[in-house]
Each structure stands twice: as structure tokens, then as C-alpha cells.
Length: 197
Image: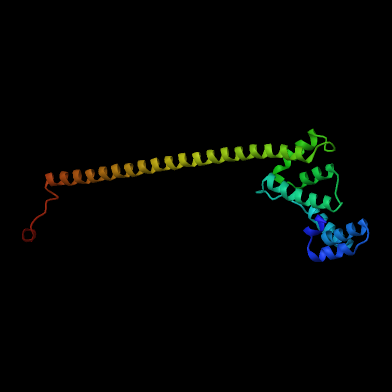
């Protein structure tokens, strides 16, 4: 009687009309899973999601596995599923091409028929950490090289400006010397306006 109290009223009435345990079970299955046509449609949809499953480049292994696990768990709940070997192969094929080297290494070094999905995910997560660390190290080196290049460019522009300043000073000094030379000779001395006539 405790079971019946937890059920909604309409469901309780349908079950109450049943005469055998089998009828009760079938009624509950139809209520919660739908009839065989609904079940088949759910299976078709999940199989399609399974077949089209891919992992984008920026998605982490944890997130991808969570999505994949939802699909395969739902298939198992509907009494439909694939072998563990099939799950492993599907997940490897779904990885982004940047993982191709790791996938090849796993395929060559491991027996995929005995490799569990959990073991595969653990292996890929370790590799993901290595890739991330390498990427951060390369990014740090690039930024370091950029800052060195900017510093060198600034220093060279400072040298250019100081060189141009010293060239300007040399030019001004040469013009002054030139004027002084002609003043001493008397050729560059200005004469008053009246005296020229």
C-alpha cells in the first residue's frame, strides 16, 4: 500500500484496475517509458546521437565524456547498447584531429578489445594536461620574445633619435662655423641699406 500512496491519483487508478503483477508492471512501463513505438523512437534518436557524436577542439575530455556517457547510459536504460570495445573506438574516432598522434599511439600500444572506457578517459586526461602545459609554455615564450623585441625596437628608436639629435647639432655647429668664417673675412657682414648705394 505504501507504493500506491507515492503514485499520482490517475496512475494509482490504472494500477488498481490491474489484476496481476504482470499487468501492473506493464502499466508502469508504458506510463514511464511509453509504449514500444515511443521506446523505439527514443532508441533511434539516441543511436543517431551516438553515431554523430564528435568532440570539438576546445572541449575538455571531462565534458566530452559526460556527454558521451549520457548517451550510452540512456541507451543501456532502454535495453539497447553497444560493446565496450565499440564505445572505446567511437570515442577515439570522435576526438578532434589535434589528438591524432595520441589516438594512433593508443591504437598501436593497447589492445582495444580489453581497454575499458574509463582507462581510455584517464589516459586522455593525462595527455590533455600535458598539451595544456606545453601550450602555456609556448605562449609564455612567445610573449617573452615579443617583449624583448619591443624593448629592442624602443632602444633602437631611442638610438636613432639621439643620432638624429647629434646630427642636427653637428649641422648647426657647421653652419655657425661657416658664418663665423665669412664674418672674419668680411664677406658676410651686413652693410646698412644706405651704404650699399
